[in-house]
Length: 383
Image (cartoon, rainbow, N blue to C red; front, side, top):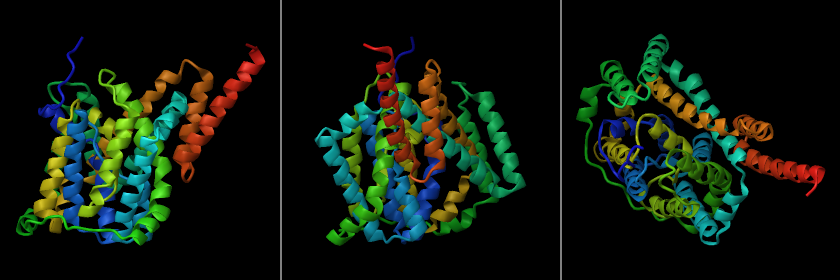
């Protein structure tokens, strides 16, 4: 029996794992900065600081992520920065109310495991699709070659505790980025110190943010950021139980703080957790390393951040994203013992992956069908 990992550890495995969620975070962060004209220093520094908070609070590779539904709406519709900050406060208050009243814990007990597995599979399918459709082809033929080399290395080194697969693949990507994608002289010349600015959202911005951004985000947060994340923690780290209440409280605290300093609303997520784990992380050390990278980016390179981020080529990020997806999709294996539960999990995953607002629809429909099926089975077989 292997000893339990410590709360925080810094080694090559934690360093490799620290890149496990970068493929989903970077496009959303940059897209929101451009769409809402956000201050890059505030976004990156606060994002990094809250990674430190999460790593220290949990002692597990549990990073913070941008709220995806909010990010998509902001990028698509060009929502203003004040409304975005108001939405962060609104969803923080909503989640705090759900947590303190016990409604969040009650909902988590109500959702059956097969539905949670379907949500995890649906998210895995979405991440895999993003990786193979958008990331791997991004640089044309050289990108395909780079991605193929990264994929082969990940497979050959998977599970190797002496040479972390993720670290080798990321190092290869960084080398390619420095050689062909980044103007290092321009990045160094553009370096300057920047700090977050104070923001105080008005009541109108909070109300608008609640209606336009927080309410569409809430169902996805309940299914993926809270319930599926707690289950993924149990799957990967059964020796360190984490309650729904704690996840709800840290989610609330983060979003009741970050808008005042120009940061974007954040959540936990089973995808980021799986990504850090897939590349080798087992403690909060990977999240601290990850956060430190963004703090440095925001403090020194916020005005040339787009140029500096070219150090991570999209095809390599696609490989990382694909393995994050595979970890999530593999959890469905424990539903194979029941044909009904497996089919229900597959139905939930299909709806979550293909239908607009699919995660909340899949969660509601899957839970309803689960209880209807069990009720029908009870009536047919008798007491």
